[in-house]
Amino acid sequence: MLAPPMSNGAPPPRFSAPTGMPDLSMPPPQHPSTSSQQQQGGIQASRDYMQNNNYFMRPAYRFKVPVNTRAEDALSDGPGRRLRKNVSNVRRHIDYTSPMLNYLQDRLWQKDRKDRPRIQPDTLYQCKTLPPCATRDNPVDCVMSRFVRAAMNKVKCPVYATCWTPEGKRLITGASSGEFTLWNGTAFNFETILQAHGSAVRAMQWSHNEQWMISADHDGYVKYWQPNMNNVHMFIAHKDEPIRSLRYTYCTLSFEANKCLFLVLHLQTPS
Image (cartoon, rainbow, N blue to C red; front, top):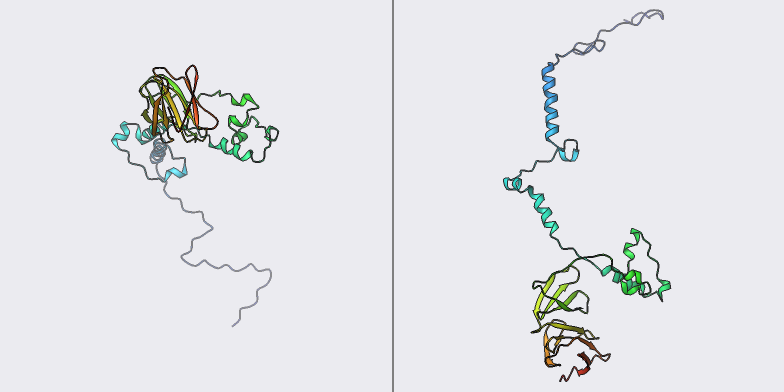
């Protein structure tokens, strides 16, 4: 049986909501709120936590597991204090490899000083520095205005002679005690000490082919040394007289020992 048709002026029918569904037309129920004392206690607890935890406002540190500190670490200012002490003991190094490589690369295409680019006073030009031997036309670049380090020998005595090894990595010093001291050229620490002469070392000189080194002392003795500091021969050049300087001739087969006169001696047949 069909329902009678509705007129256009009649209001729409009202349907009751099914049971079990909330009445959305009514405001939500009011739950019993906590007391003011409980609210103040929670706020005070959160403030105490923020004061005790220095990393509360850093999300990356809030969820990390706290590290259990030991009693000995607390007495010694923690493990970080010991780490800083170890870092401070690291020796300072001066690496001169970069300027030398720049010089070796640039001299392949630079004919003279006019082809060399000018280094501007800016941090961007730090990688373009050159050694002093590359700027001989500009003496101001050869002025060493910065102190690096002072090295002290174990036996405090005067040093009369110094020379670099042919590869430029070590410095050899001759002291008044007759010792050779090999110093590291980058870390400035001594590597080895060798008793070379019985008296004060007065002069040292490397040959032009970098295969031999000669040294002279205060008693007039001359010694031949290999690059590995092996003494191969010695003789007396000036009896009971000090030798002040040594130098090789251009042929590298003989050298001159300067006392007051020049004495030319042959390397193959010393006499």
